[in-house]
Amino acid sequence: MKNERVWRAVAWTLAGLAMAASLNTWLSASRHGAILERKRQDLDHIRACSGRWTEEDALREWMEARQAWTPANLDALAAQTLGGDPVNVVLRPAVEVAPGWQRREAEVALPATSYAVAAAFLASCAEFAPAWRLRDMEITPSAEAGRGAMTFRLEALEKKQP
Image (cartoon, rainbow, N blue to C red; front, top):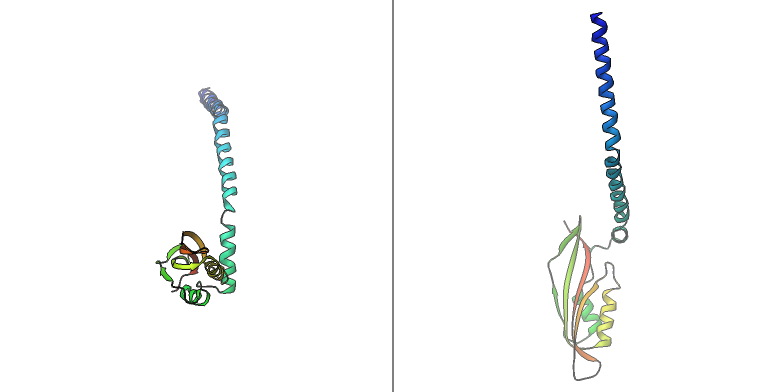
């Protein structure tokens, strides 16, 4: 008889614990649903951001395939395209932007040149891989039509040299 009472007490205790666990699960279902919805939204955001760098990755892969490690020499391009026009090229220190790759910036000052020649210079900067990209420019017109002082800020991606 005593054994039966112990087993009955254990059974009631287990039944009570099962009911409490079921009630807790039922009451927390909405909270867990909200957590799952937030995680689903986070996953959607991650998927939206995952393709964000595909263009940059494709460019680096293209440059790796062509073995385009350094941008063209701006002094040589200036001498070739500007002829006798004075030019001042200032290269800035490179900044690492991705593992093994760095961004190089340069400032090119043309104190007095024609706009057509300056446009030809910018076009020649973009011909070579990796290309120099125009980041910013300042133009100060002169009294003579089609001429002026210009300052270009250029940037290029280059492979970091060991």
